[in-house]
Length: 446
Image (cartoon, rainbow, N blue to C red):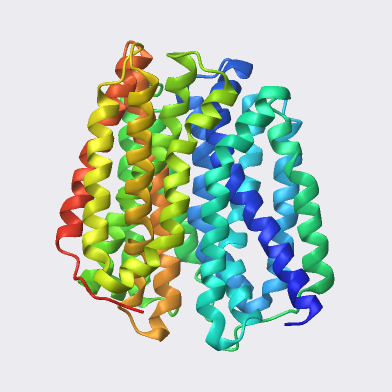
C-alpha cells in the first residue's frame, strides 16, 4: 500500500468518525437544545427525522451517482455538504434553521457511509477486502461508543454550538486528504439512476413521518390525508419498481424469506435504537436533572457493549451462525425494556446502568448478525442492491422509531409517564423482532 492510499484511508476514517460520533453526540445534546430553544418533544424529533429522512431517501441514489460519475467526486461533494451542515447548525438562531441544516448532514452521511465502503474495497487488494470492511465496522462501532462522552464533554464546558463547530476542522482535513490523495474510481457496470423511484420513496417516508409527528397539532382530515397519500405513494412505488431497470427498492429481494426476515428484525432494532436514544437523554436530564457530562458517561453503558460486540461478534457468528445471537440479543432488549418501563424519578443509578448495559449488549448481538444474514444469502450480483435496500429499510425503521416513540411520549401528562409509554412501544417492537428472528435460517457464512 503506497503513501497516497494510506492518506486516503486516513481521510475516509476521519469522515466516518465524525459522522458516527456526531449522531451519538447529537442525541446526548437534545435536552440542552430543548432548553436553549424552549422546544417541544415533537420539535426535537424533527432534528433527528430530517437527518434520517435525508439519509434514508438518498442513500441508494447517491451510491448510484458515485458508481456512475466517480466515487471521489461524490465523496468530496458529501464532505462539502457536511461542512455546510455543521457550519449552518452552529450559527443557527432558531430551531427551524437548526433543523434545516440537519438535511445537509443527512445527505453527507448518505454518501459517506456507503461510498466509503466501496472506496476501501477498491484500495485494499481482493484478498483483504474483508479486513477493509472489518476496519470500517470497527471505526463506526468505536465512534458510536465515544459519541455520548464526546458530546457530553463539549456541552459541559462550551455552548451547544460547539457540538457542530468542533466537527468542521476534522471534516476539512478529510476533504483535503480525499481531494489530494484519493484516486478516482467508477463502477464499469454501473446501473442507471431510478429518479422516479427516489422521488416516490421520499414522498412515502416524509408524508408518513409528518403525519406521525404532527398528529396532535393538525386537523384529523389533514393527518388522514397524509397517511392515505403515503400509502398511495408506496403502492405506486412498488408497481413502478417491478418494471424499473435499476429499481431503488428491488422487489425480487423480498422473495427471499431470509432477506425479508433479517431485514424486518434489523429494522425493529433500528426502531428501538433511535427511539431509545431519543427518549433516554431527555429522561436523564429532565427527571433526574443530570448534567450533560453525566448523561454522556451514562450513555456509555449502551455504547461500550455495542463496541465490544462489534469487535468479537464475527468469531462467534462463524461458529454458531446468526440465529442464536439474534434471538439472544432480542431477549436482552426485551429484558432491558421491561426495566425501562418501570423508570421513575426515584429509579437508582444502578438500575439505570443495568438497563442501559442490557440495551447495548442486545443491540450489539442483533446488529451485525441480522445484516450479514440478510445480505450473505444472496448472489454476488445481488449483494450491492441488497445492501442498499437493506440500509434504506434500516433508516426507515429508525425514523419511524423516533417519530412514534416521541409522539407517544408527548401525549402523556408527564415526561415520566410518557417515557414509560414510549418504552412500551419499544417492547412491542422488540417482540416483533424476536418473532421474526425465530424463523431466520441458521446459515453459517464465512
